[in-house]
Amino acid sequence: MDSIEIKSAKIKNTLFLDFSYTKKEGVKTDDINQSSDLPFHEDCKQAFLNLLPHFLLICEQEKESKLKKLIKSDTISQEDETLQNYEITAFKIGGTGDSEGVTLTGKKFLGTGKTLNLNTPFLRFDDEDYRYGMELVEAIEVLKTEVYQYMTGAKHAPIAQQSMSFDEAFDGEEEDPVENAKETFKDLKKKGYKIEVSTSEDAA
Image 1: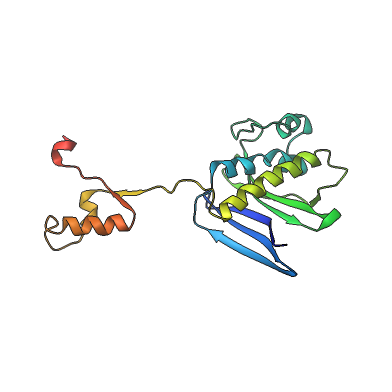
Image 2: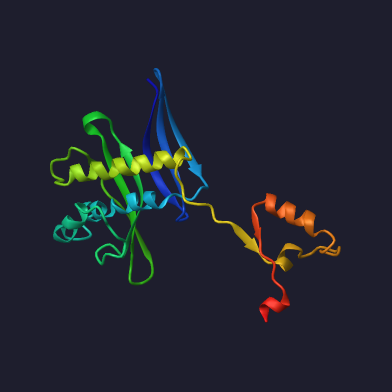
C-alpha cells in the first residue's frame, strides 16, 4: 500500500516551508526533501505555535506551572506573556515504532536584541518522564497534517499581488508610453502585476 509520512518541517524566511517526507510505494521507500515558495497557511502557523509550550518545557525555559494550562489549551496565542519572547521554527521526527520521537527547534529573543537558538533533546513519544506526551503527539499530528496539505498545494496562504505605479511601469522606456500602454499593460498582467493608475489631479 502506498503512503506518505511527513518527517520534518522548517519555517523559511517567516513565510515558507522546507519539509521532508517518506514515500512508500509497495516495497520501495524513498526519503524526500522539498522546499516551496508558497506562503504557508495561518492554520499551519498556529500548529507550529501549539508546540511552543512543549518546546519551552522540554528546554526548561519556563516553569511547568506556567505552561501546563497552555499545553492543554486549544487557543494558544503568541501574545501570551509566557510565550512572547520565544518562537518555534522546526520539528523533526526520528526513530521508528516504540522508539519514535521528535526534536523541536526554536529561538529565544534576548533583551540585547540578539537571538538564542535552541534545540530540545530528542524526546520519545512514549517517554514516561514527560507527562504531556499525549498532548505532544496530538499537536505533532495536527502539524503534520497541515504540512501535508501545504506540500500537496491543497492549503496555503493567498499569494499577495504586486503593485507598481504608472511611472514605474514605464521607467526607462524611450518611446512614448501612451502609444504602448495596451501592450505594456498586457505584459505586466501576465507577470502578475496589479496596475494602479493615478494622475496629478488625484494627488491634489
